Length: 125
Image (cartoon, rainbow, N blue to C red; front, side, top):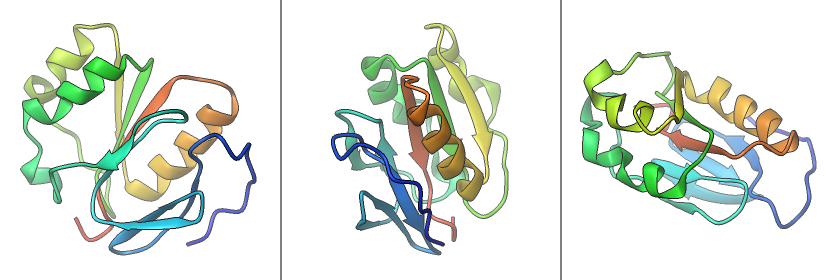
């Protein structure tokens, strides 16, 4: 699916997604992805929600976002509280939702100027 809203070129905007890919600023990346409006844009180790480990959140803590949105694939899945406790203990909110909803929510919060980080699994996760 293509997302059309245009943002400033310097910000990482999610412009589309499909079964195995996510597009940021019209550049397609296959697999899982970490993205922040400014700075972080990189691959993320887990490829399925069952593969997520506590250490997969270490980069997120270093980035110090206000909120982490975890896109869990085609369906919303909830991560075990032990997985996200180290993030929550730093005062960082964590929300889990299906990847399409995570992409839309990230774009809305980014447009509002929020310091948000999206950790996105592909739709086939």
